[in-house]
Length: 119
Image (cartoon, rainbow, N blue to C red):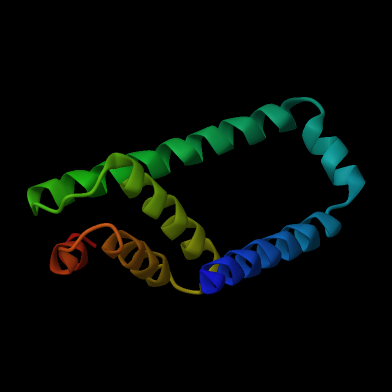
């Protein structure tokens, strides 16, 4: 139990540090430009569009897994896909996000071969 707790504390700590660093690099003038006028609407539209695309990718992956008889829920598929897309933005190669998506999905099902095949 202590190992799980320390792992969560470590993950939250790293997350807070990274978000704090990212926020510290933003200039107030840039925020003012984005928040005023069409910049805010474009940002909202881009965010919604990106979330919809990732959701549709998760549904497509779920359909592939259904064909392969891999039992994974829509919620689990969406969760793994969002994390995988985030990792693809961070890691130098797009393969890293797919590998992470597969590793996370393998936690939810016993059919590891089906997960690898679906990726």
